[in-house]
Image 1 (cartoon, protein in one colour):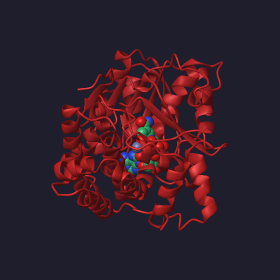
Image 2: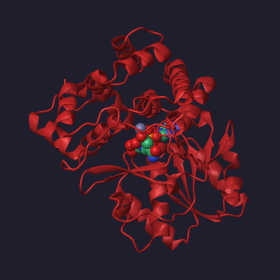
Image 3: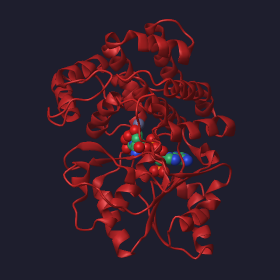
Length: 387
Ligand code: NZQ
Ligand code: ZN
């Protein structure tokens, strides 16, 4: 094993009716004045929000509701949330939803704890984040893994940038995971979540650092679990057994465990974030639309790694067969594998330049670790997905 430091302090409450334990978890982690953040209405429609409000009331907690987070959550909304949190003197922010809601909750927590700072400066790494409020997550879609991750991804709608901020302060204090809450999801969202879950480990597995045997075995086991159960969860989101495997996989896939000892690659994620920033597409769908193009581009760097992936994850021989099996899986669960399937058409040259520019923050950075990609590499990968 290579050296690592790992501290993932999130308390996980998993299982049927787990949401009924949210109030006691909030109290345990020091919450008494809660700002409860949710999305466009699924948590209202399912009755989840009502159940949570009742339990907060019964526990004597002060709380305020803030709905309306959109997928690819916006900085403007976060700023409004910070005002509310400061106004009510919130001491905890609870996100009820998926990655977009939980990331919004994290960002509000950072802003409320640092009222004198401009929030976006934390994402631009101009100001170091040194304190925040505790966050709780009630997960309704297994996907982003934000419920245990050290990351929060926000879109600045004024500058068309979508950026992640990594910090230990992004790890929620507790996460409530009831797989039955995901039973109301549309099939497409389940498929996006399955893809994102697979990709959080894939984007760690393909790293330049080798020799972390246990990490590789854990990663391969997680990917096999996602592949075995993903199709079932997409076909029937009310299949509790399949959804529970996917929900736990989503949390573990992005809590750091499947990449310990190695540097994260995350090139596909960075490629996808630029597409979401400019075209507002679902995160998981941007990843499947780009993965094949990325994998064929970087394959010559380490074909052995791709052969191991093919054999241990898919049970097939040869790098090409592993890539093919992955692409077939995406197709089977209804995910796009190129730009036209993603619904952004075949882009003109200028649009590909703009994507590459957005992804490299105006040619100021490279991405990736398995293979370090510069502007020209990135432009070629976008061109290859542009069909
Ligand atoms: O807004 P509502 O009405 O709740 O509808 C949502 C939304 O339209 C719906 N949904 C969620 N649970 C539902 C449901 N509909 C019916 N029944 C339910 N039980 O699903 C839609 C998508 O929600 P969203 O939160 O956007 O999905 P996801 O969890 O995939 O999050 C995506 C966001 O997370 C970021 C992505 O970039 C994207 O912005 N990520 C965050 C990460 C992190 N913080 O660690 C890591 C990821 O790589 C990712 O970048
Ligand atoms: Zn992701």
